[in-house]
Image (tube, rainbow, N blue to C red; front, side, top):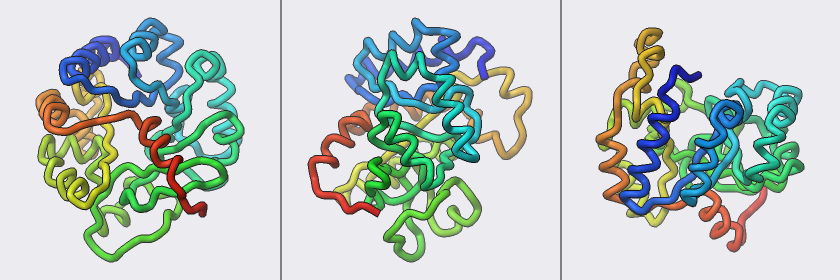
Length: 246
């Protein structure tokens, strides 16, 4: 997971955010807290939200795996009390929400979809990573709703680091479309897309190539063009309104 670029890339990201006066959400793999605790503390001290991205970035295939990842991350969870969760590979099942709610989480962001799909599920608010619908109109979330051929045939998941890798600051077109309709865009990017890992490059295949394009310039352009907030602040604003449960 790390060949020395994590510290370098996160420090660069923090500097970019500071220069643009942006507070955002870091979904942290808690194993990195075991390796570099001072790095996670520095993120927190800069005023950013610390959210949870499992212990070792293992795909959550069942409740046993989820419970084990939470158990191994107890020191991290007790220290930062994260309220947000994102599953590896943006893949989650409905039955996981109760466990997350019982462990103190307020929201999840492990699906793709339009912002209109925000729903409360088993006590958690699901906030999808943004996609732009090409055909039809989906009014409910089905699980899992991850990056798949079936998904991309109907919509463009422009909030994904994969699409940012492909399009760079070109994702602005989709952000503008969403913002013009009065909705926020939810996007994510990986540290290795800012400071590309040589080890990852050596193992690169064509499918992974968009993740390994250095998007430092695009990242800076997006920060300077738009206003950003943390997902926790977005959750608080949404939670104060009346949301349908499903």
